[in-house]
Length: 489
Image (cartoon, rainbow, N blue to C red; front, side, top):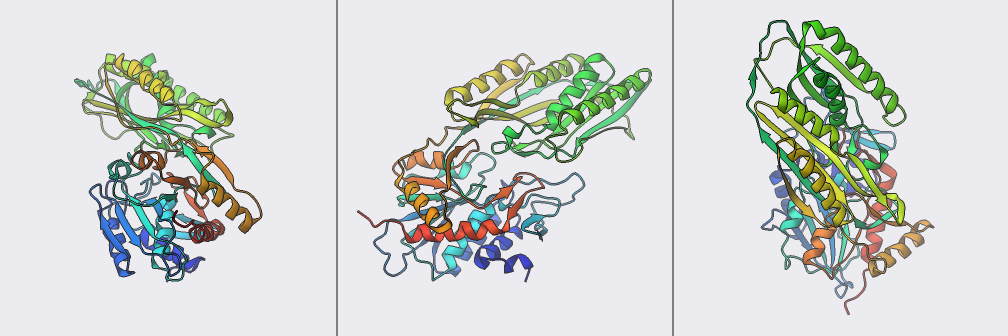
């Protein structure tokens, strides 16, 4: 038995460890979906896959609770696949290497998947435990939440019957979330004709930026962490735009909802300009290190290393200039805080993914806002900015925020239960991250919802960790909520 399976509560940790051994990155959830269906049936629950690829489980009430309202336990099965630069982990085939680090559980060199494996594991523990007191339960485990909330969007209006929904996908124990921001993906694309490279009097350099902490682009965007794509844009603006370098390719970031931690670019450098180029790289490195010394946990790594081979193609001069200028001008980070709640981010943008190579350029960003008008404003900003660079710009997967309901009977009950259990009231607030509640609520407008979870740090990064003591509090709170769900009227 792995030591993680012996942690308390054992049912949650045993199921969580089982999930870490099943590859489940977004877009590759077939195996974990079947595992969940088999698990539910093994423990006497009804289980099936709906048309959208979500797993639905149904468990009858325990004796004496048959007349309670039905409760939906909701989580998502996929995880964000992020790893360190030197990791050889394959998220589509390899189990995670998880371990206990003091009061935390982590994964070596990769994301842990506690977002939202912890929510799934808690639901599994309730399905298998015959001693839990509860009314009728429906479990909704959605697919591909991290890459566009596809499962939630595909959920049909007649799939669920529950009156209350507990979303088990928040990251701070002791907080109850009652609203969230909406989001949209902005995709900018173009094709260009590469130019031939004359290798005479040229050198080729590989520029690498790494060591950034990154983070969840909703939860941690307000920290002001460095974005590797933005740092690279500043470096290339200083070198390519001053004709001390020529762009060959550029790759940065790989998840729309993760702040990019790493970025790399290949450039050509005239031999006569080599010393100027290296001086500019060093200047940028020092500048970035000073700017982010109080924010980034580790020193920023920026290197320029002479490449072993000379490329035969490069980006045309006008294209590289337009792209670099547009990326420099494009907004990244917090745009506005909520006027009535100055500590809460209202509108932000994450310059997520850049791929420029082989005659194609693609730039993907994710805009978030609790105000649809401000979200549209960011979309229009990107349309205006990248259209001038010759790119086609489109918005995909847009969804509105989940509007808070301050008079929610469910939240009022949860607040009372938490205060009774732990001697203090939970923090009740909205968040800037995207949750599936708003999307689900479109088809289930009368469903009363709240989101909460154990304490996680640095989700969407290889530093992701789950705080062990918070899991027991989160799970016991869930059991007490289920025990106190009201009777049907």
